[in-house]
Image 1: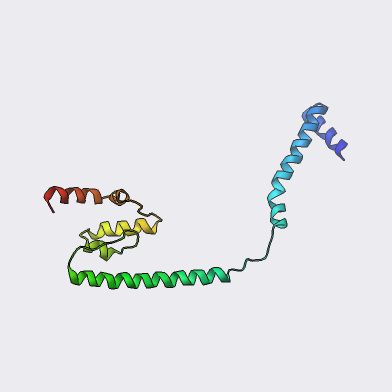
Image 2: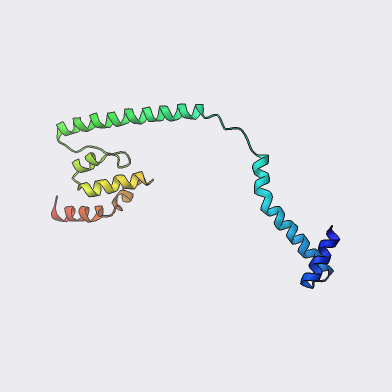
Length: 145
């Protein structure tokens, strides 16, 4: 079988014995590389993992987030009654909180969209990098507000 393959290759391409053996080896390696992913899938097929524990964890996280959201709303209403400055976290605050701080709605929406896209604020300077926010802060500090 291999001798017939050698003869066909050497007759068609005009290769000598060494070149023919090299081409056969190369074809064999290419064939193996093509079928390795299929062999791994067959070998490593396993049953679906048990995700019941993960589902419970996700449910508890959702419940915790909902509790935190309710807490933030009640905290916000108390701060409105005081009519004073209040602490906020730009990683969790809503558009309404940013509007209470004096930001325009489109900039507040921009901050929320940035967070939804996976962004977060680790330092104060990160928050200043929001497009349009730095200019507003500059104007307010210049005008004395």
